Amino acid sequence: MKRSYKAIREICVAGKTIDVTLKLSSGIHTERRKQKKNITREKVRENNDRIAAKNLARLLNANFREDDMHVTLTYKEAPSQDQAKKDRAAFIRKLRKVAPDLKYVAVTEWEHTRIHHHIVLSGCTLDQIDELWQDKGYVKASLLDYTGEYSQLADYLIKETTRTFRRQDSAYKRRYSCSGNLVRPVVKREEISISDLFEDPEPIPGYYIPKDSIRRYEHPVTGIEHLEYVMVALGEPRKYKSWPRGKKVKSTEYFRPNYEESQEDLFDLVDF
Image 1 (cartoon, rainbow, N blue to C red):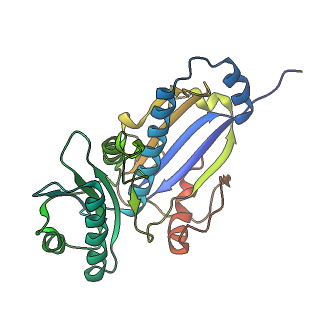
Image 2: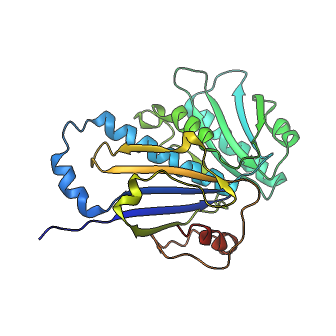
Image 3: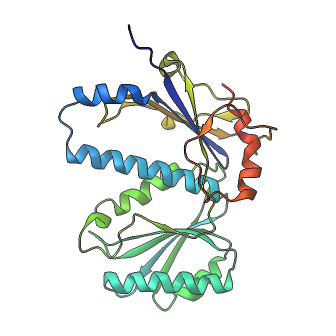
């Protein structure tokens, strides 16, 4: 008897964005994995980098808004890795004292360039940052744009640390660190028809799909077909009353209740 397979749709509401992934169900993975050859370490790393950038984009989209800041902290005199790590920790600790609502995501880059820190943050002012870093070096700041979709920034930050965090002599064993008060976007999963995987994506009312967010590809390890795209709100996300069908991928205590309440209604938008 011929087996019938389904596809899976994963939906993640993060701020003004709705991140959608369609892929064949896990039942096909084992069969395709047996057929998949030439799986190199480089392909696995590229896939891990892609997943890291996607997760970071969701985190940024869920927590940061227009006019929040991306700052680069540089040095007058280059420190060692260990000293730079201490400097970053001390800077954030002092900033928290003057900005108790501080939210941040931070990375440090040091290979092929002078060591420097990238920090995306909210809940503080540029004057506060300047005052706390002026003895160490210089501050370059830019404001986040109005779109609420920060995947390009996430890609950049992940690329900044792709080589360094894997090195045995690196003082940084994680790609990025973040404040504990960040909300963690919820991912929902549902079964769909396989035909949906091969249709062109259409935005729901009040949203648009950036062309560069649409990505069809074959998973480099499993050989499974994937379709990914992001829908971005044209204005403020609309409010709806209920969660759609679907099931959380994993239940976790990290989701802040007030964020779940505010995002709950948005899932009803994704009633395809």
